[in-house]
Length: 84
Image 1 (tube, rainbow, N blue to C red):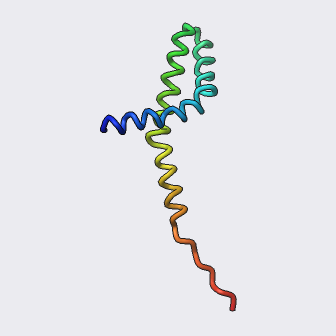
Image 2: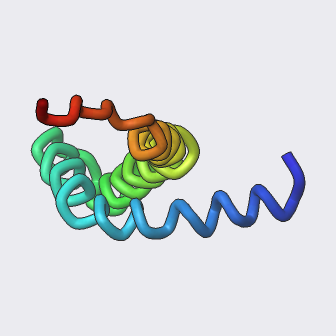
Image 3: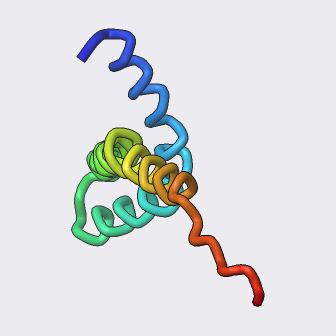
């Protein structure tokens, strides 16, 4: 992977991170607090979990969905027969 593409992927990860951080991060933090872990450790774990999932979305899920939608849109539409 080139440096430029790595930086681009890191940049593309920021939006999924933004979308996931409150809900998923809050859930992880709630669960780690329930387990009695140190609050700062819980924050660290929540950041790792949200970051990993956001990276996966930017690296795999979003490009796969984009390619599938492109194929779907570019697929030839069936031609209906002209009325007789």
